Length: 499
Ligand SMILES: Cc1cc2nc3c(=O)[nH]c(=O)nc-3n(C[C@H](O)[C@H](O)[C@H](O)COP(=O)(O)OP(=O)(O)OC[C@H]3O[C@@H](n4cnc5c(N)ncnc54)[C@H](O)[C@@H]3O)c2cc1C
Image (cartoon, rainbow, N blue to C red; front, side, top):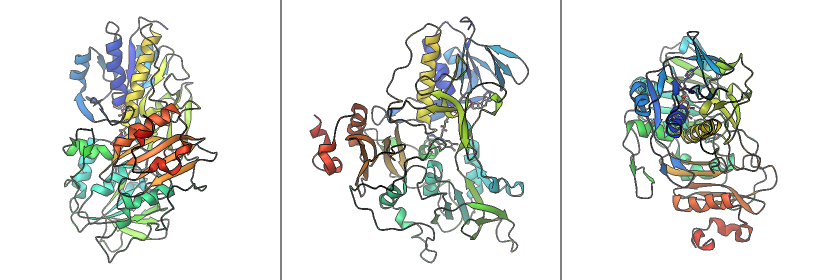
């Protein structure tokens, strides 16, 4: 490595801009180059702390030129085509040498093959940026029936926000399946009013939403799924609000969610939502009657005529441009995920001095941690900072990253208008041995996963006060078995036990 060469960051999303600006503060006298083909960048504003680790991140767009000048960073407006030892090869054939480099080229939305039919591309919308959200807004005006495909946060929020048209929501597993196992989804159906889906249209009852007896509280459930990978889902509840509606924070950093719907996502017809679980699109057809622009054939045998199909089914890491290098890449699952393999907190790829951060990375957690990867702004931000710190350390400045962010997964979000905090292995991800799930139903749903006597994960809905306590319990690995079901009691205050 030639230390005098510039530090190069490839990609101007949240991960790349966080990495480049932090590098600029750590290495004020070292040349820093940002490679980004677009004239604008995505920048994270200072996050609002919900707990020590769970933060509300908002993202804004800034002009590349002005932003780079502010941080004394040189901008090279080009696509990276490949990497060679100590240099990036640009699309125009130029070589950009580096001492250390961070790849932050993001991910692209995955579109299932039946929805890629070129004959229907004008009615199939994939959300990837502000522009596609604007075109969605236009396409929705006058829409009668909209099909939303996907179980992640983006789909959940769209279903919640689209008004004045009939929404048919298809999920591969169960409702909320990208985040919660079936049992939690059922309990949360009441919390989020999902059990009232389609209530606005009694003549058209929900067909696919599974309605089962409510599970018994605080019981151990041996059927909970535990080995599902969540690596490819993108969570999107804040994106509509932060771009198109005012966000009001209360004194504790909670979001005021009195605003129920955002009028710009409004169709032209009476509203209703119908959820079809375990259902996918198998084919698209022309409507012989001419009533609908497209008819979707579903795995349950139904044919649904609709005006628009919105696809939000996960992302694929943008790493194809590295295919002629030796860099270690993670395997994709069903065309989703993949990415440059890096260790959590270390962020260095299999090529020395080449780091990776954000959606293009496949981050491997430490064995004993309660952290896992979800492609989120907050994780792009943390990874960008960790990469910058380690890159600077490689150049002899400062210490390597040693923070807590990769010890416990923490995400604060809004689902269906309610503040939700997800902590650790809240869905019992990867917990093969016996674990217990304690739940408190109702408006302020609480779920705590306990294994080996200690808290491994928690979901808190509308109760951010307790979130800090559970985060500390996960971090401290304190024994809580003696509390049993009192862990999820409303009274007395849990904090009293741990003072
Ligand atoms: C519609 C949508 C809504 C979302 N909403 C939320 C939300 O509400 N909350 C949340 O936490 N997360 C949300 N996410 C996920 C979040 O956007 C991502 O996790 C995060 O933005 C990833 O940041 P990044 O910097 O890794 O990648 P990106 O933001 O994708 O940036 C990658 C950059 O790299 C550049 N690039 C690509 N290839 C090259 C190349 N070869 N050479 C040079 N430059 C290149 C691109 O131009 C781009 O600017 C959402 C995602 C989508 C698609």
